[in-house]
Image (cartoon, rainbow, N blue to C red; front, side, top):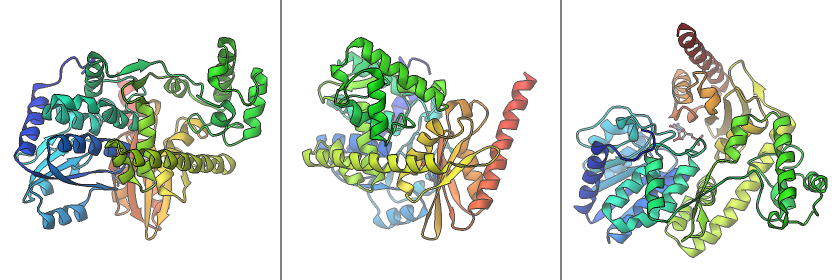
Length: 456
Ligand code: C5P
């Protein structure tokens, strides 16, 4: 669905059914995911429920599984709204003694007569690139009331938090942009490789991009600034055009020298979305939601989405701490390097909350650009796994969602997610078997794709 001038009628009719169902109840139970898209989804829904005068209880969970379903079966809510999850459990959800609405964007796993199920995949829209869960929730909120279009910044926090914008918006996301532009609530700005504010501070604390020799290294940042001919306490806003161009060129060269791909450089300058009324950009909100979720403070993220002042301040503090921890992990990996297999690279992480983010940044700025990156964290008797790929890697046939699902199942664990970002949980001690199986599966995926290409 290019350009997204219109949305499929059946999608809108399911959204209408969901709005009608919510209207029938005074108490709504909301469950969503703890990551940026999940918090943003819950934020959109809860704001819309508040405006309708509904009572609600919301829980943000790390994963949705049989245990959560058992507790919902005991709780017996009249109306249950699941966001950013639920696709894999439609049958179990249908057996609950509740009205169930699932607003998801993960891979389609069938459909349901009883559950009001919305995932963009049903209508051929890719949930990995063209529709975040928050975008689905935004459609529902807009159906519940035209005034809810003011919640668009929150929904965009989820779109950008899920990195769905990096190759331009499509599908439902593009539809939402179009609506925002029509309502003058959104401004599209050109992205830049240059950091804002105090240059020494922002360069030496930069994680995206991670600049070898500069990130986490104040002396390196000072040296770079002197090469450009600007004082170390200068801020971007004080630089003239020629100094800005020089700094951007040197940064680009440094990143290319450390092996960064052209796609990553393009992503750094991809368009940004700014919401003048809220004086906030989508990437700002995404990083705040992400930091809250990944530091076990998802409630603060939701408070932020509900525009609670104290939550906003707390979230800004959490983001600073989170960024510092990610930077420290990247520096550690830069020092130690990654372990490699034929079709993947991996590292062990002490902190599973940082793994997904560190995985992606490591692959783009430090490791092999052509190998999916896997992070393993041992927590008690389980090992949690995060993995990330790039679009260039996907083009070679890699699908981490099926890869992690099948490799995890091989060692008795569970896994899944998106082709480009996926996760799993396995029993502690089975890591080597899991990695060997995953390496084999990824090799097979690439071979299959190569065979298709050569047969053409
Ligand atoms: O935790 P992380 O951010 O690495 O997860 C990446 C993706 O994998 C998310 O979309 C998450 O919902 C999914 N996932 C999953 N099953 C798991 C773990 C993660 O579907 N056991």
